[in-house]
Amino acid sequence: MKRVLHALPLAAGAIALCLGTLAHSGELQSPTAVLQDLLEKTNSLYLGQSEQNLMMMDDNPSLWTVEDGEELFHTARGPNNISLEECDFGKGPGVLKGAYIELPRYFADTKKVMDLETRLVHCMTTLQGFSSDDPEVKQRHGSDSDMMKLQTYIAAQSNGMPWDPQLDHPMAKAMLDAGEALFFRRAGTLDFSCNTCHGDTDKRIRASVLPNVNSPEEWSKAISWPAFRVGHQHTRSSQHRLRGCYWQMRQPGVIAGSEASIALLAYWTDRARGAPAILPDMKR
Amino acid sequence: MLSRKRASFLTRSIAFAAVVGLANVAHAEETEQALDYTAMTPEALAEHLLFETNSFRLDQPVQEGGVARQRLEQDEIQRACSNIDGAAPDLETLIKVREMAEKSIVYPDKIELGDWERGREYAWSGFGFRIGHNNDDHTTREAGGNCYNCHQIGADRQGGNLGPALFNYGKNRGNSPEMLRLAYGIIYNAHAFFPCTDMPRIGYKEVLNQQQIADVLAYLFDPESPVNQE
Image (cartoon, rainbow over all chains, first blue to last red; front, side, top):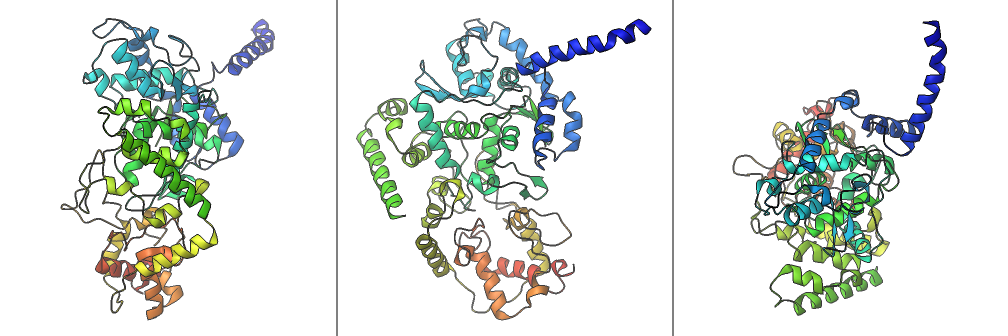
């Protein structure tokens, strides 16, 4: 016993050293720890609004979605009977670590700026040979959809890393700037723009505290999708969030993977630049 | 403002010319290839993305009649109040917005308080006018005013804080005809008093009709209303 006690500080030291190195590479921190760090930095009402979610985050049901996705990703599927390991998400075929926080980005093979969902659809249709009408591709929502399983697994490989959407190609910059114009563009029955609800800190719709686009710490959590939405009991995507916002704004339904949706995602990801991603997150 | 307007007109014309030039190209993908996004202004590209790239369900019928496309087409006030970062436009534009808004208000001959209980229903209801994956069916339920999403109104229900709190609205102001007229105007088109405000134009956009606004006024002004019982 005495011997163990003596050894403890040394072991703890070694572990701490180990943790330090790993945390630096963004590997060992849990999504909960990433959020806790942001909370300590900002004391934001938005980040801390659900104590219950914070308590439950280590048992986030989306962690199961990650595991489902891992299996799917590495399984040979589709008419071509091939896995997604050859899919290039921007950092080379099969490289997932840190790929998501660099999206949306320009892809030379399609000559398009693509977000995670669009790129995934691209690989499933071109590489695996699925048709866009196959349920594997068509079903976009719900924890039990292939799309959400795969997205959540891929995104989780960027947990804790700072958002860094790639703007090296002029098309990416053009889409981002158009996304900014869209973000502030008022229209519809109620004259809303995205900025109506997301331009200030500590604003609420009824009891829900809204994230401020001008605070990278708040905005990082806001755009950390996939996330488990407790109210829906499902893992949800960025595209699902965007669709909900347009619905609430009383503006036309935005189509997932459309160019306008990607322009908006390019802008919103850019506004969280440098703040660490929480993947998967848990939201109200 | 003039230069901004001019620039925006120019870019729109360029985008328009480009689109017209390509009108006989059958596939959208080919159109995208031919159109150089990097040569367009952000505003012109945004307009192109909204209307020409199959990004929205533009052809869906909407509750007020017509199709969804019209919801994305900006009127003058929406355009004037869409500056990047939510910045207020210059004074000249603000004055113009205020004047346009003032002219738009249709006042009843006499403004009378309606039924505060019905008014509370309208103030609390967030139903109505939503379109896309799930359309609000106005034949099953009246559209509400969405007031409590942004305003704390009475103490009987938690409201938002995007707009000011309205506790004791009537108690603090009295029920003079001038005060009722002012409140009616603010609900109808608040830009007449606060140009480029975030508040929706509830009357102008026919979210609520005259009688419904009178009911909401009762909720705000009636001494019996819980709003005035704090």
